Amino acid sequence: MSMFCYQCQEAAGGKGCTVKGVCGKTSDLANLQDVLIYTLKGISIYNLEARKKGINVPYTDLFIMESLFTTITNANFDKEVFMNRIKEGIRLRDEIKEKLLNDNWSMPEDIHDSAIWTPNSDEDIIDKSHNVGVLNTENEDIRSLRELTIYGIKGMAAYAHHSYNLGYEDKEVSAFMQKALASTTDDKLGADELVELVLECGKYGVDAMALLDKANTSAYGNPEMTKVNIGVRNNPAILISGHDLKDMEELLKQTEGTGVDVYTHSEMLPANYYPAFKRYDHFVGNYGNAWWKQKEEFEKFNGPILMTTNCIVPPKDSYKDRVYTTGAAGYDGIKHISDREGDNPKDFSQIIEHAKKCSSPVEIEKGEIIGGFAHNQVLTLADKIVNAVKDGAIKRFFVMAGCDGRMKSRDYYREFAEKLPKDTVILTAGCAKYRYNKLNLGDIGGIPRVLDAGQCNDSYSLAVIALKLKEVFELEDVNELPISYNIAWYEQKAVIVLLALLYLGVKNIHLGPTLPAFLSPNITNVLVENFGIGGITTADEDLEMFLG
Ligand code: SF4
Ligand code: SF3
Image (cartoon, rainbow, N blue to C red):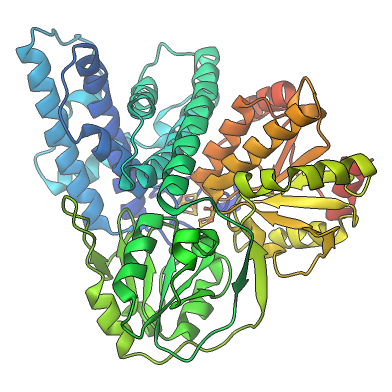
């Protein structure tokens, strides 16, 4: 075994990747990611103490948040980034330690190795990876809970980072991420304490998503019902993917008047729903589908592609020189657009110049898709929706948010959506929607049967909608609503969405296409018994189960 990773839904054999990631992550990259997480644990141990004493080393919160984000599935494949982050992390850790010691803090004798280990060379760092991975926690239930927490804060960090880019920061969320990191080094914490930590993670997940919602809507307005063009025009163009709306804004501003069009791909599709972006004439629409189709779609796009976050599929040589990364995203040998300095925007000029030399995109489809049903838009339709429920025109809502992925078994979600009775409405968010958002499932009295709230983080919107409906229908419990949850997951953002829903009291969530490999049988039982979590079977059987 040259590595061990089981953080995403594609974990090899439903157990874990041990030679190379199904995602394309090599073992040396996976091992460096393990060492980075370990380094963050060491920093957090000191920073929790520093916080108590009011000692603040600027940049610590941001460093931890960004580093967690880089380790998310399909975000960053650049070994150098991880090597540098580990070294910077050790430096930062020791700076905080010094400050504490100068403040008369006495270091506990049994302080965890992550807080004192010091590499002298790159080889030391590589060697360390053999002793700090996931499997170093021997008890499989403790391991399961520790990793569930780590994956939850990875997703949380991604969302917190998008807020941060827009000038919003919640110090409590950062403090929780550090508490969580440090807690996973504490052998005194048993399963009960760790279950509590996991639920607390859900609480901060809600806070992080609420803050991002505020950041996005304050900056760009409330998403509104929008018909998004999926065809192409005859100009050179840039394709932007990932989740970062600040990058979207700056790219649109810098391309205005240059003759270069802009299209979104995958999780950037919801940018089309924001009033602040819709006003740009050169913002044409969305090109293609979910992240895993990028090999064929990037090939056909012809122009440069900007990846602002995950999900990156290792690029083919035929278009590799057209791909750019920025922020937490990265890939060996691919050009990276550097971060903002102070108030200055990122500089996308080289991508724009590159685009001017490229042909326009090949049309892969035509028409429109409809979306923009985040909480504000849905609540303006609330009367109509409530009446439709009262009249029996809408019998049930299905939350089918989450991720898409390349596994054949995900055809289930298309089939499920197609077979849902005509008096049901799908509430979605995340790239999961690409399995059914072009199916023309019709509408119910003008309400589309697929209501897309936006990106995976906009699953928060779906929770707001559910809570509002609970109020309107004067129910005691959100689980009394005619809403079923059939969620697709892939990476760690889906983990924090799930924990957030559990924290909000949502029960009986079904999760597919497979349950996480990192849930041990005992921990799965805890989730089944306390929250009614379940898997999926076939579309027909599940329809009967949900509707029966
Ligand atoms: Fe495997 Fe997923 Fe980890 Fe990649 S992120 S190595 S596919 S478990
Ligand atoms: Fe998709 Fe990666 Fe999860 Fe944001 S882009 S939902 S998989």
